[in-house]
Image (cartoon, rainbow, N blue to C red; front, top):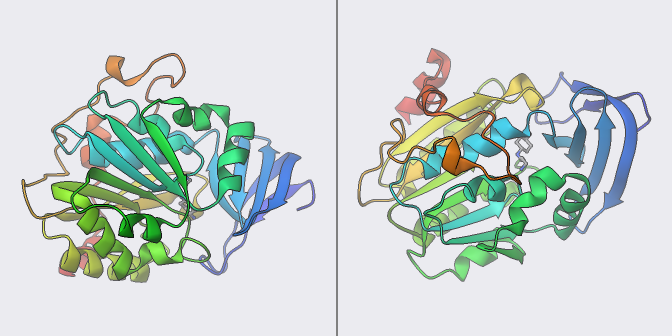
Amino acid sequence: VIPGWFSEISPMWPGEAHSLKVEKILFQGKSEYQNVLVFQSSTYGKVLVLDGVIQLTERDECAYQEMITHLPLCSTPNPKKVLVIGGGDGGVLREVSRHSSVEQIDICEIDKMVVDVSKQFFPDVAVGYEDPRVTLHIGDGVAFLKAVPEGTYDAVIVDSSDPIGPAQELFEKPFFKLVANALRPGGVVCTQAESIWLHMHIIEDIVKNCRQIFKGSVNYAWTTVPTYPSGVIGFMLCSTEGPPVDFKHPVNPIDANDSHCKSKGPLKFYNSEIHAAAFCLPSFAKKVIDSK
Ligand SMILES: NCCCN[C@H]1CC[C@H](N)CC1
């Protein structure tokens, strides 16, 4: 990466590349799993890049972290035990910790370098690790889930990178089966589910697999994140058989005052209206998602 511009080139989005102006390279490393890069951008704050793919920027990470966390947790009445797969930067932990009903937060991240780099360069994101309810496991999410007793969690959040590299198995059927097994009846899962502009085929497969495995409800939601490819990112929201979950109408609203303390700051993006709106899809996506 030469100072000037960083372009996000990937076979996952052929023929296009979002670029950010680079002020200064802050870290470059190679973990057991991937190349890790942090740079100071001119207009989006610090940026975390894994294998050439933008994971988060200080300016817009709130959109993704708040939506991937509060869409599931605000849809279930009283979440107590939450598991995060991936999410090594700590942003989802910061958001989960806003929920006073939560008693236990487990996180399983495969790459320790991501945790260490986030703590060093993104303290306002990694602040999530400071919550006493958090237990960090460094390892493979599939192996972790195989060891989890059936029905342990009220909610699972899969904050993954793309299905190229270490996160590939988090998009496949065996993994979804393990997640369903780890959830209590009526438990909820939210996974990172790519872009309706770029990845309808991936989304089609994920929806098909989820409908076979999650016998509660299966919904796709989406939001805007300027620095993700095509400027949008989606989420699969599923529940296991049991007490019904209506993702589109939050039963457990997170309100301004109980949702922030000094270290976390206020919610910048999520609110109950944008929660409901997130499930409204353009016709080309509805056609595929509702027919699976
Ligand atoms: N916790 C960081 C976010 C990881 N999710 C991203 C979604 C968009 C992808 N192209 C890269 C990973």
